[in-house]
Amino acid sequence: MFYSRQTSLRLHEEHLATIQLWGRLEQSIAARVAEAELDALLRNCSAALAEEVTRHFEFEERELFTRLAEAGDGDIAELLTEEHETIRSAAHALRELLALPQPDAAARRQLGALGLELAERLVAHVQKEEMALLPALEDLLDEETDRELALAYANS
Image (cartoon, rainbow, N blue to C red; front, side, top):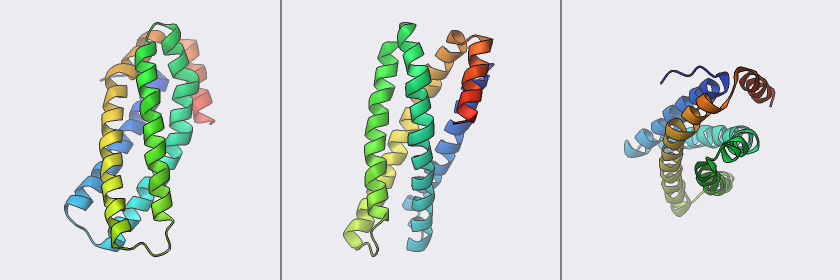
């Protein structure tokens, strides 16, 4: 889809990066790559997710979902907020597992399972935002508001 709003375009670009990174993780787990390679990829995914659940999610919740609710699209805003909470919780669990100094076989299995769960949740979440949130923003935001939001997001 073509986005005319800067805010939508920036979020779309981040969504594409999320899908690419977590898709790589899914492929790596399926291919049973070496433990060290998987560990490095899981750490990259966790770091990217930490950025996403703070900056990206908080911006959406603070600036976008409130506008959607005011425009009568509160149901989608509520659903996306609930998904944010679920993803935050799983991201926290992933960070805790990655912080273990010497993860045993059970922890390694948990890491793989949690990585796959997060990949599935994030891809499904991104798809919802691409199908509902971004098109709604295209209609909802005027040029000035879009410019202000894009600048605020860039500076966050």
